[in-house]
Length: 485
Image 1 (tube, one colour):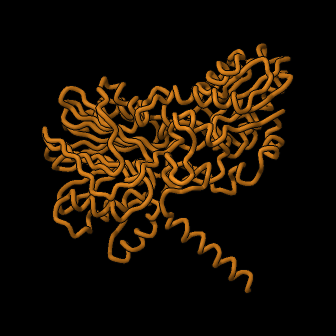
Image 2: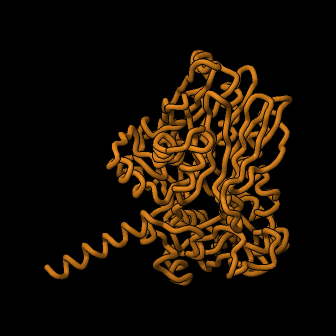
Image 3: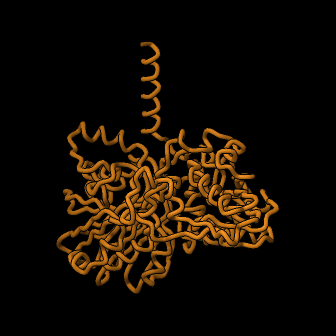
């Protein structure tokens, strides 16, 4: 099994990625290529399900796409002209093969496979109700709740059953469903998680990001709209919009970190946005230094934009190793502190005696920032400043991003000066929320009607959080009982 970043949990984990192909020879091989382009969105596990007009075929495995789906005997067993695939980080449910997607079930309407990017924020509440009514779950994934809701719906057609199920869930989802009748792609009404549609000849393709279309040579057609279900049957493509229209709230962190810089998200170049973020950061929080240095790789586009706006040389003061994986070394207590040095090494000859500003996309727990600052000081940097290409991350995400609980987020328990002292930088500053919106082409954030989901920064969640609120109420009740005791 090969995964990345085994030493450090000081980054927000990138949800999941999905990719689907309808009607082409070697559909599974194309899905494997698409998933490879989406590997950054989930590096814990991968899976592909195909349909050959008679039977469904599935292979799921822990680890990367490469090493699991680059073998002829695997792809050769995934026969059929239609297939969907998934790469995963575990945002809900345990880390085990039974939670790897696509999930499959035999329903009254026929075979049904589903791949899901996002998180159902009332999944536990729905699950308890379903179990009480006799449902038997095979995984701990929130995605299986959707399958059971479809299975127990009183509607006749599969499409109506799926719509009925989705009207009962809250939270975020982009879904690909493979059935005996065709393929269904859909997004939640807020459009929190991304999903795009492409075409290669007569083949219809769906993907979490446009970069996955690029890798298979497909043409980008459009984004699947928030609240839309696109149904593909044979040569027929239908669009259904069964939900009450509401204002879109796509995830703003897709532009900050999650999406690959060569993707187009909601019609905007991610790379261009990240450079614009860096320029806004320089205008808001300039500092007199010799070099602008990115924390690789996520801080690089913002650092380029910062350097251009500040007219300060951009240099690679940190060199990253791309070959650190769990198969390389199993970190015990004696070597765990070397994790950052295995991933990053200071360009000592460049930074020695220089005043530098480090550009990174975010600070989560703060442990990596501390180690990077210490590394620069050990390399002889005269001053080490840090600038963050997003506002402080103060709140957990409940929409498919694996974030630490709020108490472990550095910005939730420290102000900026306290954070500066913690990471031992000479200065620390973050991009303002309005600066982030300006980088996206907006005049500012509209507080009465925000244009994006930015709850990780603002605490303004666009949906109810049934499971979380129930958990908090339970904790308060237990605390009260302890006080009475």
